[in-house]
Length: 127
Image (cartoon, rainbow, N blue to C red; front, side, top):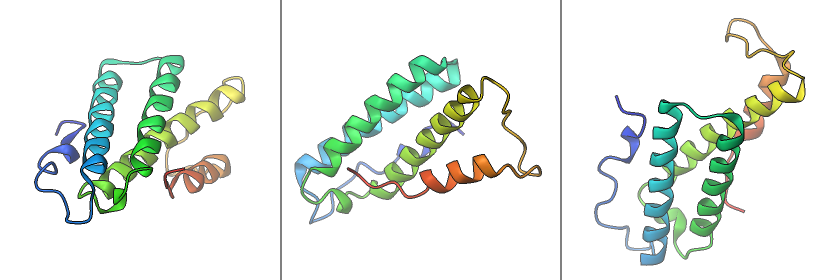
């Protein structure tokens, strides 16, 4: 399945409490997330990924400032996607901060550092 499968079908009628500006901000964020998914599939380096994540953070903040943002039908999916991209960025930061000594380990090899990162990225809220 395509990496942006969660985008399909959500752009229908907005919730009665989601403002038109929130719907537009959500669509803009979804477009940025979809573009980043394509770049990730094609291959992206650490520096460019960091810039792209900063760009989606800004789009997330714009969404969070809109009236009725949390009533956007795709809000939870967008929030989850933000958390996943942020987690991946945190893993890369963790790896490079160690000078390349810390490899990403399989789930069968617990690594407290990665557990902390996962916990830190699991509760995305706009700020």
